[in-house]
Length: 122
Image 1 (cartoon, rainbow, N blue to C red):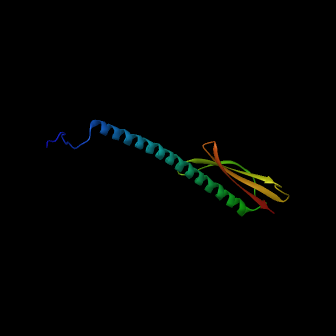
Image 2: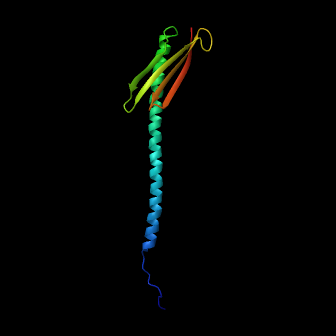
Image 3: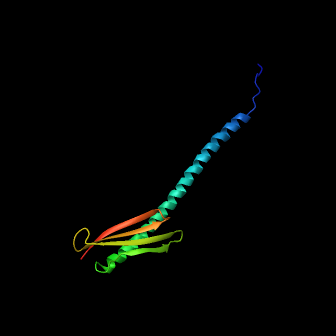
C-alpha cells in the first residue's frame, strides 16, 4: 500500500492569519475594557476624596454646634491628584423652628459634586 498523501505537520498560512485575527480582536476588546476600568477607578477615587472632605467639614460643624453654624462661600482645597471646592449652606428654621439644615457640597471638574446634609437643633 502506498501512501497517497504527504503527511507534513504544521499550519497553513491561512490558519495562522485567522488565529492572529481572532487574537487581535480579543486583545482590542480587552484594551477597551481596561480603559473603562481605569476611568471608573479615577471617578471612584475622586468621589471618595470629595466625600471625605465633606465629612470632615460636617464633623467640624457638628463640633462647633448650633449657634456657631454659618454658611461659607466656596473654599478651594486640593488632594494629591485633584483640586476641590467646598461650600457650606446653612438654612435657619428649617425644617422647623429652632433647627438648621446644613448642606456641605464639594465640587470638582466644575460639573461634578458630592453633597452631605444634616439637621442641627438647639
